[in-house]
Image (cartoon, rainbow over all chains, first blue to last red):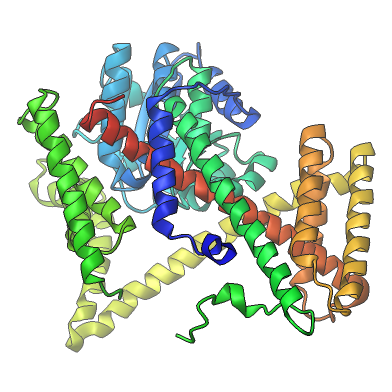
Length: 295
Length: 292
C-alpha cells in the first residue's frame, strides 16, 4: 500500500487536476478576493494620472501567447481604467510575439470604452534592441518611434504629439513574462530616467520582483492570475481572471493533498524500513529507486 | 530523445483524436460552431490544444506534429514581423523608397554594414570580418550594461537591505531574538547530527517558515528578517572559513532561508502553470464546447 501510494502514476494526478479544474469551472462557488497592497499601488498609480492635462500611460507588452491567461486580463483592465479616466494609452512591445495580443487588447478595450485611435490611444509595435531602445526613448522618443504599428507618424498623432522623451509618460506599466522588467525597464528606465514603473508579471517571476518593491524601484506589482483577479476586483469587473481563481484554488488543494500523501507515505516507509532493518537505520536508497533496478 | 511506447502512443493518439472529432461534430451539429473563419479558428485551436495535452498520456505522433507546427509557425510569424516592422519599415523604406531621405543616413548605413558583417561569419573565406561586429557588440554591451547593472541591481538594493540596521525598532529586536534562537537551534541540531540523528532536512525550514508567517501576519520586522537571511546565505556561500561552530550554525540557517526561497519559487511556479491550464480549459469549455 505504502509503495503503491509512493509511486502513483502521474496520469492519475493529471486526471485529478483535470476533473478538479473542470468541476470548479462548471459549478461556481465564488471565493473572496482581497487586493494586496502591491496591486493597489499599481491601481492608485494609474488613478493618480486622472485629471492631468495630456496624462498618458505607457504599456509595454513583453510577453507571448504562453503567458496570455496571466497577463492579458491585466492589460485589458489597465486600459479600461485609463480610458474611463480619460487618460491616454500608448502601447509598445519588446517581444515580437506580443504584437497580436497587444492589438487584441487595444481593440477590445477601446471599443468597449468608445475611444479613438490616434486621439486616445496608439500602438507603436515591436522594436528590437531592448536596452538601447529604452535609452533611445529616454533621449528622443520620436527618433525611437517615428511611426506607430500602422505607419502613422508619431508627430501627427494627438496621443503622442507632446511626448518627447520616456520621462514624459506619467506612468509606465510593463507586462512581462521574461527578464525585460528587471534587466531592461528597472535597470535603464527607472534608474536613468526616473520613470514611475509598475509591473505585471507571471507568477513564476513574482519572487524575483519583491526586492525591487522593497527598494521602490518598482512602484507596484500585479503578479500572475491571482494579481489579475485582484485588479479586476479593483476595477469592478468579473472577468476571466476572477473566474479562474476558483479552479486555481481547487487545483492547489489537490496538489497539496498529493504532497501530503507523498510525505506521510515517505515517513511511514522510513519508519517501516527502520523497524525491519537489523541495525535500526533505514536504507536511504529505497525511496530514490523503489524498483531496485540499476538502470 | 525519448522513445515512444507504441501501444501507449497509439492509445493516446486514438483517444485524443476521437475526443476531438466527436466533440467537434457535436458542436457543429448543435449549431454552436459554424464552418466559417471564426469556427475553423476555434476548431484548429481546440485540435492543437488537445494534441499538446495528449503528451500528458504519452508521447505520440499527434503531439510531435503539433510541436513542430508550433515551432514553425512561431519562427515564421517572428520573421514576417521583423521583416515588415524592422527591416522594411526602419531600413529599406527610409534608405531606398522614401521621397525624402533622413539627414543622418549614416545611422542606418553603419548598423546595416555591421549586421551584414555578422552574417558573413558563415562564409569561411571572409568570416574574420564578423569579429569586428562581435567586438562592437561585446564592447558596446559591456560598456552600457556594467555601470547600469551595478547601479540598479547592486547599489540600489544595498540601502533597503541594510535599512533595518540603521534604525532598530521593537519589531527588529523581536526578529533579532528569533534569528539568535534559529542560530542556536542550528548549532544544537548540528551537534546532534554527528550522532546520526538527521532532522535538519525539514525541522529548520519549517520553523523558519513559521517565523516568516508570524512576521507577515503580525506585520513586524519583515525587512530585518530579510537582512538576517542575506547575512546567513552569504555566510553559507563564504568558503574561506570552515563551516563549523558558530559559522556552521549561521550557514545552516542560510540553507534554511534558501530552502524557504526555493519553496516559495516552487509554489509560484505551480500557480503559474495551473493558470496556463485554466486559460486553456476556459477556451476548451467555453469557446469550443460552450459549457461555460
